[in-house]
Amino acid sequence: MSNFPIENKRKADYPIHSVFTDRWSPRSFSNEAITEDELLTILEAARWAPSSFNAQPWRFAYALRGDSFFQPLAESMNAANQQWAPKAAALVAVTSFKLSIPPGAQALVPNGAHTFDTGAAWACLAIQATLSGWYSHAMGGIDFEKASAAINLPKDHQLHALVAIGKRGDPSVLPDALRERESPNPRKPIRELAVRGKFL
Figure (cartoon, one colour):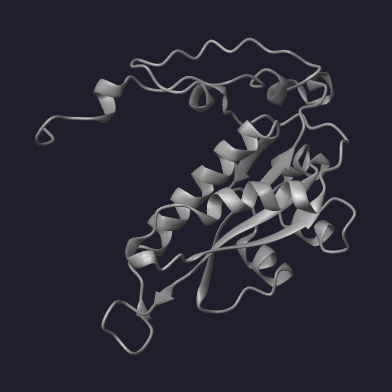
């Protein structure tokens, strides 16, 4: 998947598909472009995420590098993310529609599951990117007001993150502090995250 192999020391506590440990979020992106069809294939996976009452609240605004609206999204990032993310092949704004019409209702009401469902959609996006030979890196380090303005976000929507998508590039171009972190990070043991019964 990359001309810059990197050691992946991740090991699952229980048997799972390798895509879950193969997926990680690099910062070194190459200059390889992504086609719109390739990006839409990744977003197609997000489309099929599980959804409360099938409301499907997730919404995506995307820009390919070179699009006129790519730069305004890049400029909404904080200084740390601007060191690497603008080199990605595409940027995707992950947003959600905050309202829905529940079964039996006739009008829009607040959807309490819009963030939960959109998180599931982002996970599907990230896994499909890995399966398709691409890498994705979600960022919360952005000026949300500026990014929302860049995509003309409706008032009844919420912006959650920007996602950089691309092929891995040469990590030596990263600043020292970022280059030291350029590897798949570990996870807490499952026994720290899941309890049988109730929390102590």
